[in-house]
Every structure is written in structure tokens, then in C-alpha cells.
Image (cartoon, rainbow, N blue to C red; front, side, top):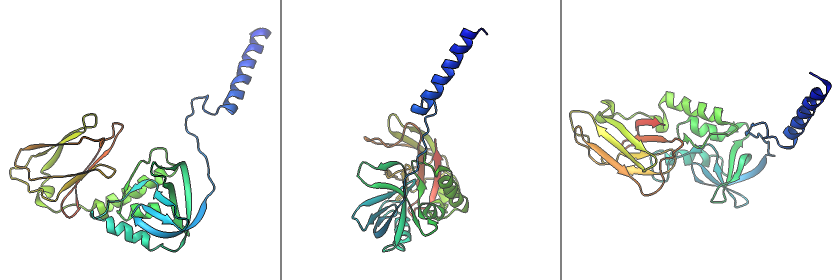
Amino acid sequence: MNLRRFLAFLLVIVLLSILSIIYPNFTGNTTISQEYPKETAILSRVIDGDTIELDSGEHVRLLGINTPEKNMPFSNESKLFLKKFENKTITLDRDNEDVDKYKRKLRYIYYENRFLNLEILEQGFANSYYTNGLKYETQILRAEEQAKLASIGIWTKSQEKCAVENCMVVKKIDPQEEFFIIQNICSFDCNLDGWFVKDAGRNVFYLKTIKTNEEQTYSSTKDVWNNEGDRFFMFDKQGLLVIFYEY
């Protein structure tokens, strides 16, 4: 390599180094890890199992989890868990996103050395939710898996005959056309009154009796099933798990 080529090569290296400092994503690394200062506040009111109100009047949505909606099985348990910390000073920890579309702060919350988001998952009172890219993604998924393996809370398995016999199967989920198909593969009818299907969030479909070998299609006019991946839960009328499927 002659001197001219060497100097040109050296200049390119210097320029790339400068660009990588000025523009951190220039090299193709799109993950930016940023630490935000933690806050302290008094938890003045529990709205539900994943939403609280601070003494400032601000609302906080707990990051990485989704608890059952009001009047759904295990919704009261998740709410009662958080109510133990009302009027206590908690610490709030932010991730990349500050607030949601409802202007609620998105936070991890702690009481002393207790990580409450994780504890709710460990007790089976919630499922993980929008964890991709969160700094505690691994811990959140591990806590959920712990509850799943223990079959507690929302992961408690149904003892209904149609559940024990594995009668219900998911034939198809179409996230583009927003429908799913279930089938009864048993040799007897299944009374599904009070049974329901939900996604990873708050969308719920109530089921009806399904005859032997019958297929049923449930569709929605709104966006329910995420194209990038979602979760399918089927629960019996007691809120006990019949099917868990994710794509």
C-alpha cells in the first residue's frame, strides 16, 4: 500500500470514528440505553391492578404487565395486592417511553427493595405486556414463566371436562382480517357459556356452546390481534386457563 492509499484509508477510519460519536446509530446499532433519574412519590390510590394515582394527582401505568380488567377473574386480587402500598412512599423508574396516549406515566414501581411489577407477575395476577426492548424484559418474562410453571393466578389450569380432555383447539388466528377460529375435536358437545378468549391486552370475546367437531369463527371490527405477534388466552367461566397460545 503506497503512502497516498494509506493516508486515504486512515482518513476514512477517522471520519467513521467521528460519525459514530456524533451519530450513535450510524454504525447500525439502533438500541439506545438511557438511564433516567428515579422519582419518589406517595401512592395515594390504586385504580386497578396496573394503574395507580400519585399524591400529585398523576396517574401511573405499570410497565411490562397487564392485569385483568374490572370484574374479570383475578382483577380484584391484583388490585388488592397494590392497595397494601397505598399511602406509602414508592420509587418510580422510567424506561424509554415517558407517557402513554392517556397521559399516564409509564413506570416500574418499587417499595423499599421490592420490585412490584415483578411481584404481580410472580403471583400470577398479570401477564407480560409490550416487553420488547424494555430494560427489564428478561426479568419480566422470567417472573411470568415462574407463575406459569407453578400454575397460579391466571395460569391456574381449568378442570372443566372440555379443558381436561383438550377438546378446544385454535384452528387459525388471522391478524390481518381480525378473526380467529376454534374447533371442538371431542366426541361430545362443550357448553362454553361464560368462557372467554382474550389477547395480551384488554380485548375479550365471550364464547358459546360448540358442538362436537364444530368450528366457530369470532371476528372483530377493530384492531385486536397484532400483526407482529400476540397472545391467545382461553379461560373457563371461573377464569381458569384452558388454552394459552402465542405467535
